[in-house]
Amino acid sequence: MANTSSAKKMVRKIARRTAVNKARRSRVRTYVKKVELAIAAGDQAVAKAALVTAESEMMRAVSKGVFHKNTSSRKVSRLSARVKAMAA
Image (cartoon, rainbow, N blue to C red):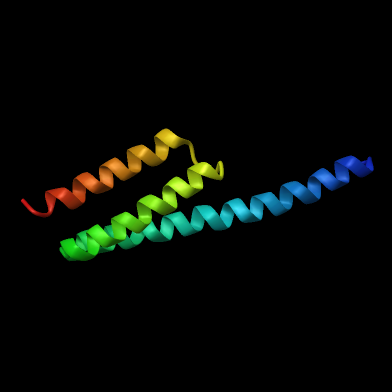
C-alpha cells in the first residue's frame, strides 16, 4: 500500500497508463484480426487494405511504447507474407 503522497500519485498515473496501453493493444489486435479474417475468406484485395491499416496501427503502438519494434516488424512481415502467398 502506498504511504507517501508521491507514491499514491504514481499509483494513479500507472493505472491511467495501463488503461491507455490496454486500449492500444486491443486496437492492434482488432486490426490484425481483420487481416486474418480476410486471409481466411480468401479475399486478397480486402486483406491488402486491412494489412496497410494494421501495419500503421502496429507501428503507432511501437512509437507509444506498447510493443517492441522487432515484435511488430516480425508480425507485419508474417502477415504480409501470408497476404502475398494468396496470389499464388
